[in-house]
View 1 (cartoon, helix red, strand yellow):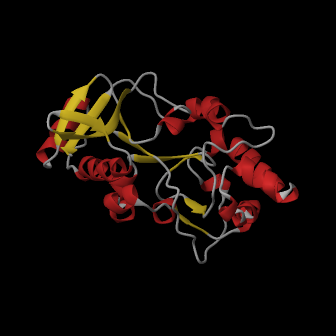
View 2 (cartoon, rainbow, N blue to C red):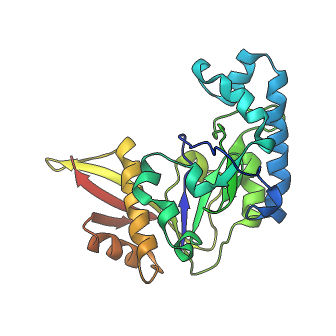
View 3 (tube, helix red, strand yellow):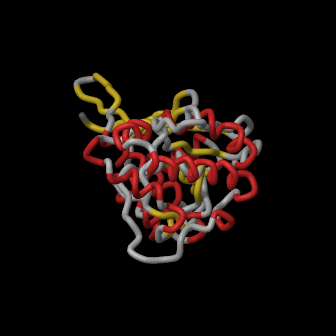
Length: 246
């Protein structure tokens, strides 16, 4: 089983530590070149008029200082990704507290790094898939070929996808079995997707699956594990739907 997590907009900046070493990140052979290209493009934003740089980075005017932060990423302190990423999903999952064997079943999608393991050391950064850098194009398209060459995709493997659509557009397995986790509320026999709390649901489901003594090998066993943990679930084509009270 492989669990694909989204990055988080909220991050904890490492207070100290050596800078990121691209050669030590997962899939270095396939992803170092595109990672270097993006780091160079972000460093170049420091020479662009601030208003334009903010628009290219797709942050609000109140986050304009992030342009300068991203320009210095190669020298910034780095820490394990499991400690840098924060927010609702990561709070519920408590990724850094999971055993090493469970963490090895996790990949975190990233607009900047492509994908990282929980123990890969990265700096604080601000960069999402909606950013538009000169010479890069759309980030999903930028990453697609490199991720296809790097990420594991074997017949019979289960891939549980917690990513948003923007990150899913960059890579989907062609041979492995993919199920995406969705969350719905239900009240008076009416069901509707939930947005913010979906992150909490995905964090909870990821923790259930990763903590299992035997990792699920197919959608049915993933659904059964989640149901035994107290969730109401339904399997549909390509999806594991979690239903919560409205």
